[in-house]
Amino acid sequence: MDGDLLTTWSWVFWLAIILVFIIVEVMSLEFTFLMLAVGSLGGLLAGLLGLPWWAQIIVAGVLAVLLLFFVRPPLLRAVRRGGDPARSNVDALLGMQGTVVVAFHDGRGQVKLANGETWTSRLAEGSGGAAPDEGDKVIVTAIDGATAVVVPSRTSA
Image 1 (cartoon, one colour):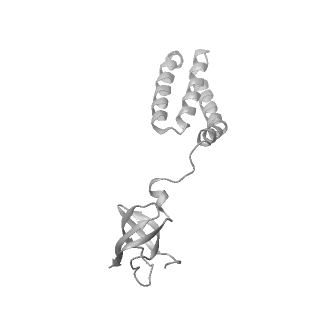
Image 2 (cartoon, rainbow, N blue to C red):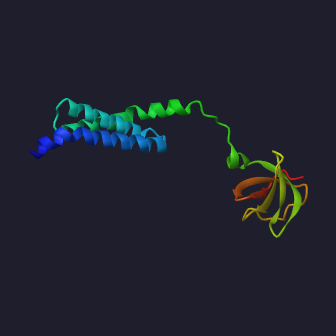
Image 3 (spheres, rainbow, N blue to C red):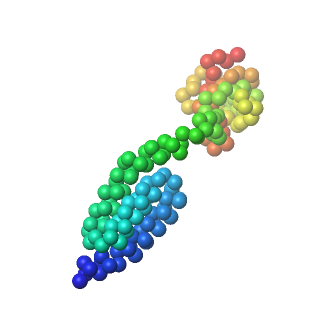
């Protein structure tokens, strides 16, 4: 009797799990939970065709695994193909050259970057040598909050 009850009401379980997977997918946008939702839809369809609950789970699992390995990767490549390869925000500043506008004292100073922005800066640990003077060239190695971490450029003038 319990097996019949599970088979009879399994559609409620499948609808609930499909809904949960779709909600999680909307938040993650990685197509993983979409594939699991479609696999669960296969389980729902198997249940509507009268298969027992254990067969519904097998159908859902096999379908979800096949989708995850064979449909998701090309789908991700297709979606990401049109992405902008240009770096932005902090990533765009890394490696950028700048000019010292306020000489470094105690490892801190100000630099004007090639994009025209002036940043409070500090020397990277281990950069060694003399502190850069006004007009010297530096290169941004990291951003720490609102501070550009720099090293003297090899082509300092």
